[in-house]
Length: 187
Image: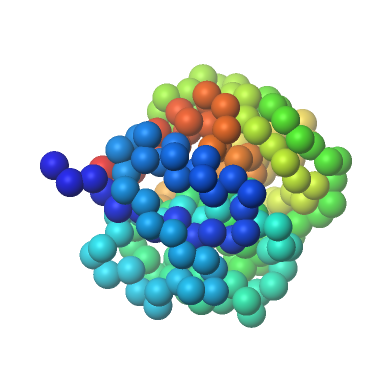
């Protein structure tokens, strides 16, 4: 049986190696492109798309337009991680705000009826490294996880195809189990 291929879009994350390793550990083959080099269409080559975190603010709509267009037209499951989620949220009209700097493990309450959370308990400990927070889910999306510091720790499009995580899921055991839930969406 061939491994499903996942397109990983590198938005400048510091943890690309860890992210790819986790996806490959879950049985996926990964291929990486940077945000400026995304294909116009996926075709049938990829079963999912993962958007990495970013060192650049998600506000640059013109720069990320090709990436957002690809995601919206992809027809496959998409997961935005940290800045990847923020890029998608801003493109949909979401608002980010500065908040406390968080680095390390933090508890988040998740909606366990969501397939993304099939392998975790209602409260997960996930790794954060950021200061920007999505204040509310934009139109066409809903919050599926929240914490003391952020009302939208996890995001889902209304149809469940596009997902986002404020946390870096490439770290910690609960992050791996959430990635496992995502992998089940494209198998």
